[in-house]
Length: 256
Image (cartoon, rainbow, N blue to C red; front, side, top):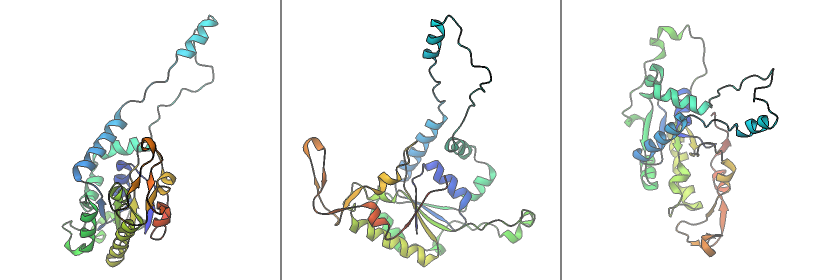
């Protein structure tokens, strides 16, 4: 099992469409409405034009010298750059034929609570999936001319596993370990590669901050509030998230 660095929703969807194969299953650890709302807000934010840099100081300096502000000779113009995440979000909206064809064969499940997730995993079976298999490569005449490509893995991918437990009674070593045990056992039983990815805010890559969070040993532990709600902690012993996850997962950077 692998724990990848946090990703934006559009980065996750891009990764699945280009690096996963049937019968991969994506488990979104939130409600459908909440996830779609997050994706919509992110795409809208990415489509907004970036603010132009202020040139007030440049003109003031030129005015003091009695000269008009001009770019220095030999200085190339600043290119209009666009981040990889913005470009991928735009292509997701465009929905090319390849993207639509691949998406039809990826199973997506929404589990809004820890109980929903554990119950789904306990009875999960590839044979029960309603997602149809893609055509066999042997039936595709163009496959022979495209050359040999690396085979894609079938993944059991979880998005927002820690967020699902946070701010609930299951936010503890006991709660996370119980879910991780079911997750790993399910992936091994069906022969999938288990992968966990946490959501991140735009422009923030907070892997170390995420793994450095504290949680109590037992489920249902109470918080000890500090003055003005600052310096609060858990009653009893608490450990880092990293200490819990490293018993079940290998940490790797995501391909985004």
